[in-house]
Length: 152
Length: 166
Image 1 (spheres, each protein chain N blue to C red):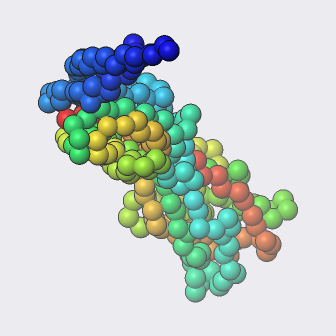
Image 2: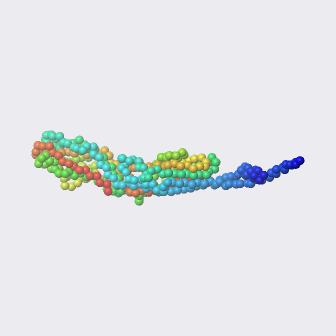
Image 3: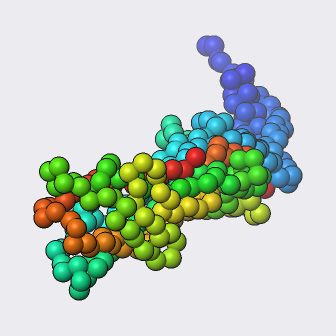
């Protein structure tokens, strides 16, 4: 008779601590670095749409849980053509995409473009419009807008 | 055996996954260059395309007034651009071969325009402004000097209005 004595299985456990550092991060992408508004008859086209259509915006943020991710825009001053100026409030926009909002441009305060809660990738469009008035002096006007995405 | 050991270790590692929050705020900025083209433009609107004078007794009505015209001017020009509105007749008032000198046609105006006498040789200034803007609902009233010397007929001339915004 052969008896087989079972050998008790031996188990060894150990632990490994894995840490991942997930810091706040914000990445903003605009579909273009330039927007231009063509000349138009103020009576026929009181609001001039930007050439090329709406601006596509992608805002990627890793943020603290439940914190507010903000995308704002501010102009560096009025639209200028030499000494002639047009207030940047002549530029307004409508938006598509969850969290994106319509607004009126300012050169003195940040204006909200979009807001979201927590981390994520958000995409939308901003359709910029230029108020077209007879009272403007002729010229080619320029300004620079700064978009700021903050993830706290 | 070996498999069992490593399964347990993997389970422990899963439980101990730690994410360390970093509280610093992250910011990304992008700039967008905006340009808007505003070209010189001129738009002139008259309330009527024709003006007529009824027949009248020269003694009773030495000057025949027409229904006033309303003139709307819209211009975009340089900041110091000189906007002008002029009128010029294509000739005398004619009925067949009978003329009435176009200088018999005069006008008075409301605010914003200047009174004058029509000419067929030189444009006459009806209004002038500086810079861009709207000048609406200005009134111009033509009058025709009525004279016994005119030959009977139905007289006509064409007057061209020219609005210039440099």
